[in-house]
Image (cartoon, rainbow, N blue to C red; front, side):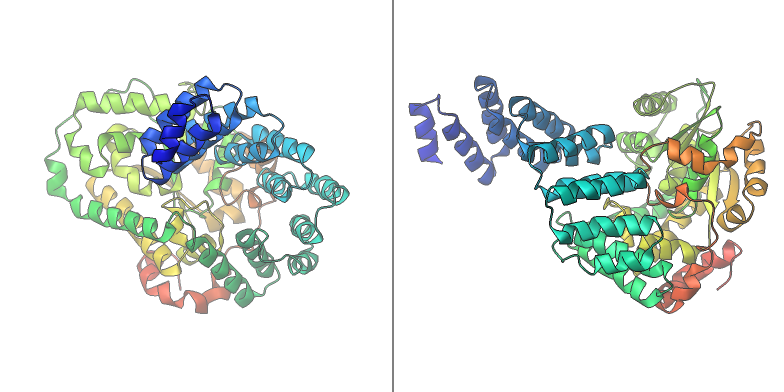
Amino acid sequence: MVALQRAMDLNPLAAPTRLNLALALRKAGKAAESETLLRRTAEEFPEDARILYELYVQFKIDARQEEALEALEQAITRDAGNADLQLKLAIECGLVERIEDAERAFRNTIRLDPRIVDAYLGLAVQYEHTNREHEFAPLIALAEANGIDEEVLAFLRALEHRRQSRFEQALACLAQVPAKVEPERVAHLRGTILDRLGRADEAFAAFVETNQLNEANPSAPVQRAAELRDQLRTELELMTPAWVKAWPATIAKTDRPDPTFLVGFPRSGTTLLDTILMGHPDVIVMEEKPALNHVDREVGGTAGIPALDEQDIAEARRRYFEEVGKVVPTDPSRLLIDKSPLFLNKALLIRRLFPNARFILALRHPCDVLLSCVMSHFRLNSAMSNFLRLEDAAEFYDLNFRHWERTRELFPLNIHTIVYERLVEDVEAEVRPLFDFLGLDWRGEVLDHVGTAKSRGLITTASYSQVTEPIYKRASGRWERYRHHLEPILPTLAPWVEKFGYSL
């Protein structure tokens, strides 16, 4: 590093020397110095894309996503013909749900270098999550024309066969895909197909394989999941009547209508329900966005609630609606529904900030819920990482509903419950009372959930494919086919099974 510093001093116009010094500083743990040098060099060498690319890498290491994406886009303005940069841009845009930009960048990647396999795989995943199954055949034809290896084509064909319910053909294609090609997705796809074929034991083994592959993710998902469960346990210890009694008295200042919150454990039918609600013109559904999480961090989490006075609450409300406005229209004349299933454990904060808030609670047989969570391929945030192991998933379920029930013991909540099994049996009979609860006139068009789903574009939840199908009942009671795999967690779930009116 000393030699590189000396070389830069002798020839400050040599961009490669500066770049090498910045990389050496980063490797030595001097990230701030590396960033400063890269920024200065990027300004002084306005045509060099490599400097901005390394800034992008630095920001990614530091988990500064917005700055990383900005640096990458600036790098591309300097080297628009770089296929590798286009591919990285496509992946980054996908992470922040800039779907059209991601697709454009994947297409640019293929145009610049038709042999980059990840661009075809990336497009396939885009089409999968936006329910554009009609795009699979043209993509496969393009990949064939560009000489993409048969083993990659087999994965693309498996996706198309699965969407067309050609399950045996899909399974045969997956058998041709080598371990190096999308191993987590291949294992998960195999599990979903085997489940549809009724081969429960093989399906469960495939889902276990998927989760074990995800456990090895460098972001330490299992550890982060455990830390979240520890946090929930700590919060439950705080939540006593004496603790609440010490809070300062406040008078709610309802400057605008309080939101309605759609909660319930993941895979309880919340995506189907929010799609039905989206079909009403007087409703705005915000689906799993971080507005309340931002406020939660700013007030210090559950432990910080007792310190909130009227001014703090007013500011927290303002911040919430400010964050909401970044992702959905903020029209006070329309009902805002904040759909985030795991706000089960944020009900106490919601009650403090929005005392007039209504809650829609989605319930489903706990065993079907846990099975579906373990069978899903979630993004590995701290919450979803709890579904990589069956025992962790059951404990997480128990902690979330204990949190919810404890809040209900401490405060009255205005709740309407939707039961998944009744919903799939007779949608109108189950949801019409909900519209009365929400003060909305009944509109028959809300029952066209398939049409609503197809018009909404990207669906970010694990239900992205099911919600565009006609309502089916095959998932009700599915857990019984997997009962012997679920035996270790039945003692944890049994109290909730009984409480919610189900049976083992």
